[in-house]
Amino acid sequence: QIWAMTNKSISYKLSIYISLAVISVFVIFIIVNYLFNQQLLKQNTEHQAIGLSAQINSKVSEYIISTREIALNLSEQVIYYSQNGDAEQLIYMLMKKYEFINAIHVNIDSSVNVKNHNHFMIRTSDSMYYENSNTKIFDCENEERIISEVADTKQKGWTSPFRCTEFGN
Image (cartoon, rainbow, N blue to C red; front, side, top):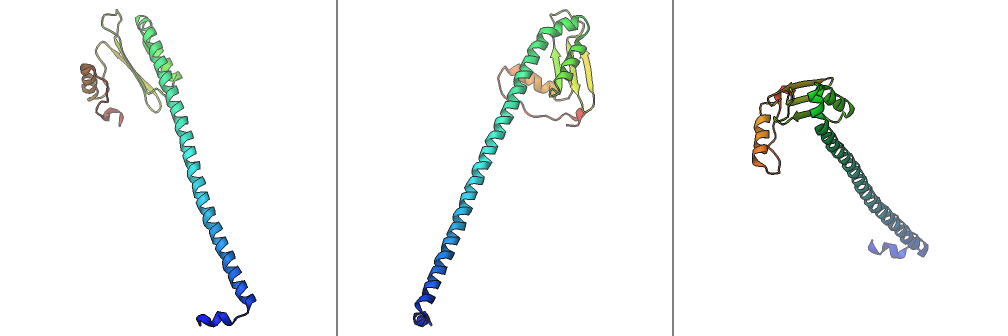
């Protein structure tokens, strides 16, 4: 049977060879096309990831710069507003204007002559809560310990994470 094709006409043999060549070229074309598309998809995904990370980086930088400017302006104005009994109004206006800020905590040095040295405002899903006092204000039981640890070490670095049960976090 191996020799059976040798008895066939030359046109039959050529048609078989041409068909095999066309099918081979077609299969090679499909494989090359598949590999090329895979490479394009990978490059497209990489470019989208780079673009998305640049966009996120830009937004984070914008928030950091804004927060720095807000803190600078607040530190310059809070004593005046506190002396006139309007610290809550100042902090409320900032929280209302800058919705990405979830809380503001101000501690005025005890040497400054104001009625309340500590001011705190936090945003919840539908409202804002304000508190002022002459003693430090802590909204979670672990916050005082963590802040004290950071303040006492005078070293830069991360604190250990904690959960605030008061606000459901």
